[in-house]
Image (tube, rainbow, N blue to C red; front, side, top):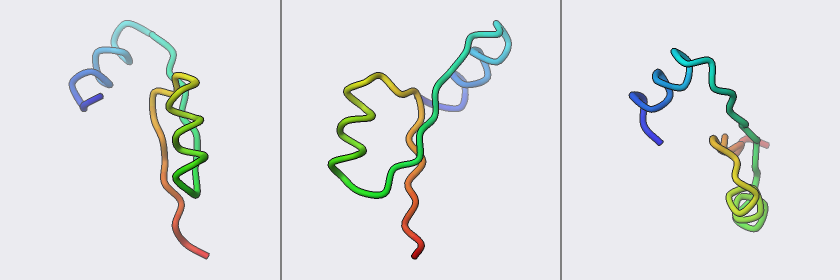
Amino acid sequence: MNINQIQAMKGTGEKSAALVVWDAPTAHIAHECGADFLIVGDSV
């Protein structure tokens, strides 16, 4: 997904899902579930 796609979604009112993930296994699960955005949290 790129910024143009995000702006198009906003323009049409399409909903999106974002999740915060902290490790690769969680990111894989979130991706497989269809999350539109994954926010990587790496601070302790």
